[in-house]
Image (cartoon, rainbow, N blue to C red; front, side):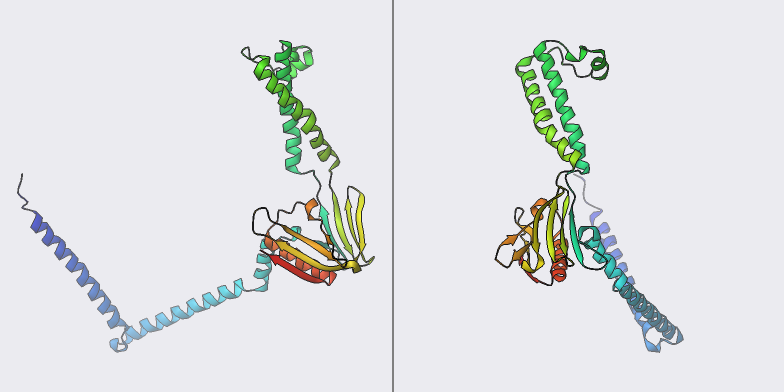
Length: 282
């Protein structure tokens, strides 16, 4: 084994390097203190003045920033960001009618699946039926042969079990589940609104053009807001009538909204009806 001749000289170089760095830091700190001392002369005073000027400019910038973020315009912008106007109740310009609309079942996703799911099921049904008859049923007519030529079973497929399963899924997907989807999308089932009308002093619930419920506003005693933090808990706004019954309507609405929005809705409704607001937050 070779002798370790260079270990001590390398250690000495490292010690000298650390000593030089420490000395440079000490000299730099002492120089800064000398320049900042009042007895350092005009240069020290100039540096202090520049420092005070910089501090003053920083304070002014911070004050301007605070005023900007605390301005009514900024607060209104933040409020609209957290509680979008479209998620709240509609109130007429005269303040006499408060309304919430039910969008109905015709949404982008429901329309998308009403197209995709039944046609995919139809494809399963065609392939399954082809395995049952032992021939490609899309070849029976020139039109289906040209348009649906891709719906042909492979040579290795047989009716039991592949064809039977595909026929089963295709039949239920197309006839049992597809038809209700089309009805919901075409007729927009569930569309309607609730309306609190101070002019007629009446509360209405209307869905699909039918009047489901009507009661005088004087029969309403309280507005109640319930919010449970658990996944399957209650998150709704409803009315407590003078006879002690509870009038709920949010089960017919897509109520997948934030707690902040529901709180704002409950507050607006209670103020509009001039009724007591009860909050249950668990």
